[in-house]
Image (cartoon, rainbow, N blue to C red):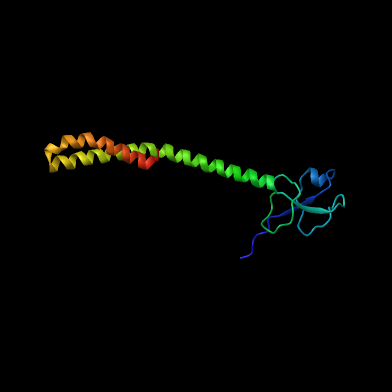
Length: 134
């Protein structure tokens, strides 16, 4: 499957109207239609001149770094939100596990019920720690 051409050309002349307006020119243009200056590949975001490294290279290094930083920040934000949402679910799961464990032990051995009531909160904390990871 052929890759889509995402590169753009722009005028290199800083005083040209095409450059000031950041006008995208077709890839088959070699010269600016307004000032006659040679055109080159430019970054899609900041309009800085870039090298021809293939069809998939359409951003300058600075814009690539900004994009990677934004992606990393978004990932961290999602992880934080996930932990916030997992905490109440972990609390609910621990409560259910504690209730079921006490009921099962009371059925099997009523005398052991007291020992289990003391051990269940410790097990609940271990389950919560395993779910949340802290």
